Amino acid sequence: MINLFHTYIAAHAGETIQKVLNSGFLSEGETVLEFEKALEQSFGFTNCVSVNSGTSALHLALELAGVKEGDEVILPAQTFVASGLAILYLKAIPVFADIDYFTGNISLASVKEKISPKTKALLPVHWGGYPCDMDELNALAHSQGLKVIEDAAHALGASYKQKAIGSLSDFTCFSFQAIKHLSTGDGGAVCCKSKEDYTEARSRRWFGINREKAPLTDLGERAYNISQAGYKYHMNNYAAALGLANLQDFELRFKKRTQIADLYRSSLHQQSGIRLFNYFTDRQSAYWLFGFHVEKRMDFIRKLKSAGITASVVHQRIDRNSVFGGLTKGLSAQEAFDESQIHIPIHDALSLENAEYIINTIKQGW
Ligand SMILES: Cc1ncc(COP(=O)(O)O)c(C=O)c1O
Image (cartoon, rainbow, N blue to C red; front, side, top):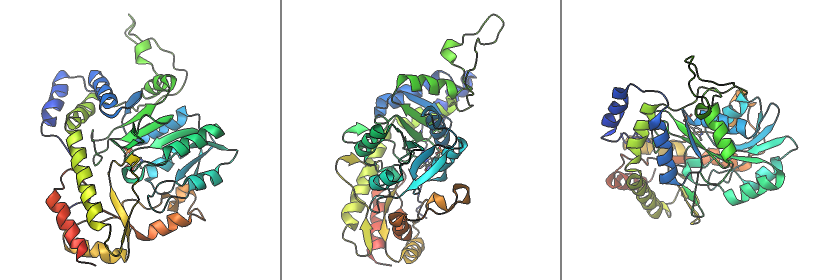
């Protein structure tokens, strides 16, 4: 079976992790710092703070953005539940905007309609790794005094108008969970535009204690006074070691992924029964997913399954969960998207031959 996802573990990862295990220093230490610096250098991130998951990154970012009980945060329903749950952790209200049918990303026009006096922040999600209209979203947010938190869980390595995703907005949150481009097992990062948020994020990821300013005293306890409740959200050294090992050939892997996406696009753009998603040349997708719209979706899924290929919707709109209050009315592009969106395999273990086999299978019809 050709799976939809793959967990990439570099051949030398075991060795790198073993070194950390041998050191006996498993928790947050030098390797975590090294990983953060490597991320900043490799991807052009600003002020990167690593954490133990993408969900923790979102929670910290929302809190640092000043989101409080009763505030509204606008996001798309086309995402994973983590994006909405992080808002609920703060007793704030997720407000679901419509999406662009041709990308799955949040619609600027819909965001404008959803802004109310209670709105505190925008939380765009780069669906499948394809960057949202960040210039427009940031300009709108600034004009209204709102914060922007990008959910870039799918978008490691993506760029927008030649600038790295991870350098554009108040906060950008990444996930290094098992099946993401770069895995630390579980893990994540929040990139902060301001140094103040960066310092505060570092402190709040570890109970609210600022390690640098809390030296060990002669009594054997660090000197600190927590003024704001923090969390146990830090990354640990062996996760960071896996991240560092997997980072080494990231560029090569990313190139291969892009090559497969290009092959899919050039081979399928005229395929009847398929409407590819839009890709504008002012941005580079991370291609965590390769999605499109398809007619007779169940037949398509069955046809591919019978040929040993997984096809999947990946995530369906999250507002259908009762925790979010049930389906939002009037999201017409989202409704149309729900009917026909589908994704085919794209990952590090997928060869060009595999991709050609998938294309040929699709071309046989369904
Ligand atoms: C869009 C999106 N946001 C956030 C997350 C949460 O990331 P994590 O699983 O690292 O907590 C995910 C996870 O897959 C995701 O797909």
